[in-house]
Length: 110
Image 1 (cartoon, rainbow, N blue to C red):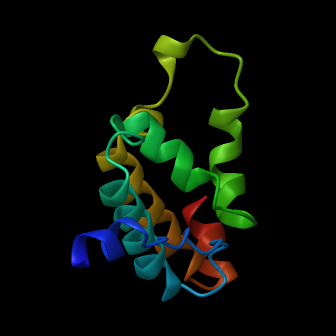
Image 2 (cartoon, one colour; image 1 turned 180 degrees about the horizontal axis):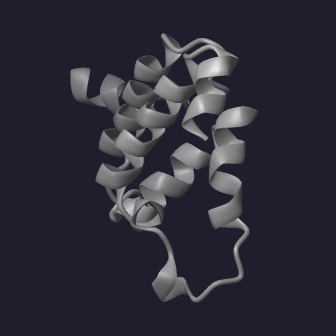
């Protein structure tokens, strides 16, 4: 009976993440991981995981990734984070740290 209930469980998709509230990043990443674990056949490779997570980004945080996503460069020259969840995950966290700063500090880092 419990097995049947678990099979019928509908896992929630991640909430859209726009970096306006830095505290929501952890929740977003947990929601992504739960989806990966719930559908291991769908998320067999890291690129699928990265693409899935990116589809739930918006605003400034998505703009950080747009140049690489829209690039016409050779697929072999893509940044590692595009095909590797373990590279994307910290990259997203470092961008979130950047967004959590005040605008003057952001300009100094540019």
